[in-house]
Length: 130
Image (cartoon, rainbow, N blue to C red; front, top):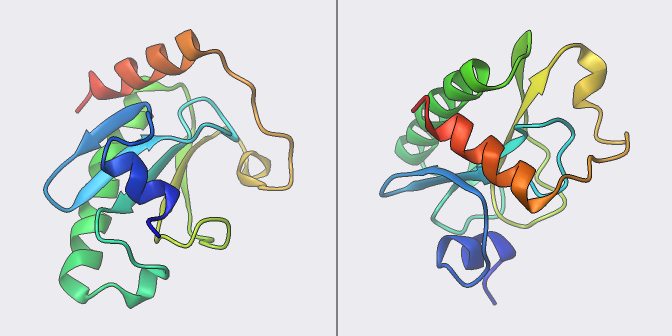
Protein backbone atom coordinates (compact mmCIF):
# COMPACT_ATOMS: atom_id res chain seq x y z
CA UNK A 1 0.00 0.00 0.00
CA UNK A 2 1.27 3.46 -0.90
CA UNK A 3 2.47 5.74 1.89
CA UNK A 4 0.61 8.96 2.63
CA UNK A 5 3.50 10.82 0.95
CA UNK A 6 3.16 8.76 -2.25
CA UNK A 7 -0.55 9.49 -2.20
CA UNK A 8 0.24 13.22 -1.91
CA UNK A 9 2.65 13.04 -4.86
CA UNK A 10 0.00 11.17 -6.90
CA UNK A 11 -2.60 13.85 -6.14
CA UNK A 12 -4.81 11.52 -4.11
CA UNK A 13 -4.42 13.68 -0.99
CA UNK A 14 -4.23 17.47 -1.20
CA UNK A 15 -1.18 19.36 0.01
CA UNK A 16 0.36 22.81 0.07
CA UNK A 17 2.91 22.15 -2.65
CA UNK A 18 6.09 24.20 -2.68
CA UNK A 19 8.03 22.65 -5.56
CA UNK A 20 8.62 19.50 -7.56
CA UNK A 21 10.79 18.13 -10.27
CA UNK A 22 10.96 14.74 -11.93
CA UNK A 23 12.31 12.98 -8.82
CA UNK A 24 11.61 15.25 -5.81
CA UNK A 25 8.61 16.92 -4.18
CA UNK A 26 8.32 19.56 -1.42
CA UNK A 27 5.21 20.53 0.53
CA UNK A 28 4.30 22.23 3.80
CA UNK A 29 4.06 20.04 6.88
CA UNK A 30 0.42 20.18 8.06
CA UNK A 31 1.60 19.86 11.68
CA UNK A 32 4.42 22.41 11.56
CA UNK A 33 6.95 23.23 14.23
CA UNK A 34 7.18 26.75 12.73
CA UNK A 35 5.53 28.67 9.90
CA UNK A 36 7.17 27.48 6.69
CA UNK A 37 8.08 23.98 7.99
CA UNK A 38 8.45 22.03 4.76
CA UNK A 39 8.91 18.34 3.95
CA UNK A 40 11.09 17.32 1.03
CA UNK A 41 10.72 13.80 -0.31
CA UNK A 42 11.89 11.65 -3.19
CA UNK A 43 8.97 10.64 -5.38
CA UNK A 44 10.38 7.12 -5.26
CA UNK A 45 8.87 5.40 -2.25
CA UNK A 46 11.78 4.34 -0.07
CA UNK A 47 11.46 3.92 3.69
CA UNK A 48 14.93 5.04 4.79
CA UNK A 49 16.79 8.05 3.44
CA UNK A 50 20.10 6.25 3.37
CA UNK A 51 18.66 3.43 1.26
CA UNK A 52 18.35 5.86 -1.68
CA UNK A 53 20.95 5.40 -4.38
CA UNK A 54 23.71 8.01 -4.35
CA UNK A 55 22.39 9.87 -7.39
CA UNK A 56 18.88 10.32 -5.95
CA UNK A 57 20.23 11.21 -2.51
CA UNK A 58 22.42 13.89 -4.10
CA UNK A 59 19.51 15.23 -6.15
CA UNK A 60 17.28 15.31 -3.07
CA UNK A 61 19.97 17.25 -1.19
CA UNK A 62 20.38 19.84 -3.95
CA UNK A 63 16.58 20.15 -4.30
CA UNK A 64 16.31 20.62 -0.52
CA UNK A 65 18.93 23.38 -0.67
CA UNK A 66 16.91 25.23 -3.32
CA UNK A 67 13.76 24.98 -1.19
CA UNK A 68 15.61 25.96 2.00
CA UNK A 69 17.01 29.10 0.35
CA UNK A 70 13.48 30.07 -0.72
CA UNK A 71 12.17 29.46 2.81
CA UNK A 72 14.99 31.60 4.21
CA UNK A 73 13.91 34.51 1.97
CA UNK A 74 10.17 34.05 2.55
CA UNK A 75 10.02 33.43 6.30
CA UNK A 76 11.80 35.67 8.83
CA UNK A 77 14.32 33.36 10.50
CA UNK A 78 17.96 33.12 11.51
CA UNK A 79 18.46 29.83 9.67
CA UNK A 80 16.59 26.98 8.11
CA UNK A 81 17.23 23.87 10.14
CA UNK A 82 17.40 20.40 8.65
CA UNK A 83 16.21 17.23 10.37
CA UNK A 84 15.93 13.65 9.21
CA UNK A 85 13.96 11.40 11.53
CA UNK A 86 11.94 9.18 9.27
CA UNK A 87 10.08 7.29 11.95
CA UNK A 88 6.58 8.70 11.60
CA UNK A 89 6.03 7.95 7.88
CA UNK A 90 7.79 5.04 6.12
CA UNK A 91 8.88 7.25 3.22
CA UNK A 92 12.25 9.03 3.22
CA UNK A 93 11.85 12.73 3.99
CA UNK A 94 13.76 15.80 5.08
CA UNK A 95 12.30 18.42 7.41
CA UNK A 96 13.22 22.04 6.63
CA UNK A 97 12.29 24.22 9.62
CA UNK A 98 12.71 28.01 9.89
CA UNK A 99 14.61 28.67 13.13
CA UNK A 100 15.06 31.51 15.56
CA UNK A 101 16.75 29.17 18.08
CA UNK A 102 17.66 25.51 18.45
CA UNK A 103 14.48 24.97 20.49
CA UNK A 104 12.43 25.62 17.35
CA UNK A 105 13.38 22.23 15.92
CA UNK A 106 12.29 20.22 18.95
CA UNK A 107 9.78 17.66 17.70
CA UNK A 108 8.40 17.21 21.23
CA UNK A 109 7.02 20.75 21.38
CA UNK A 110 3.37 21.44 20.46
CA UNK A 111 2.72 21.81 16.74
CA UNK A 112 1.21 24.96 15.28
CA UNK A 113 -2.43 25.01 14.22
CA UNK A 114 -2.63 27.16 11.08
CA UNK A 115 -5.68 27.92 8.98
CA UNK A 116 -5.96 26.86 5.36
CA UNK A 117 -5.59 30.51 4.36
CA UNK A 118 -2.35 30.85 6.38
CA UNK A 119 -0.95 27.67 4.86
CA UNK A 120 -1.82 28.80 1.32
CA UNK A 121 -0.24 32.22 1.94
CA UNK A 122 2.95 30.68 3.36
CA UNK A 123 3.23 28.24 0.43
CA UNK A 124 2.72 31.04 -2.10
CA UNK A 125 5.33 33.23 -0.36
CA UNK A 126 7.93 30.44 -0.43
CA UNK A 127 7.14 29.56 -4.06
CA UNK A 128 7.65 33.21 -5.02
CA UNK A 129 11.35 32.85 -4.14
CA UNK A 130 11.96 29.72 -6.23
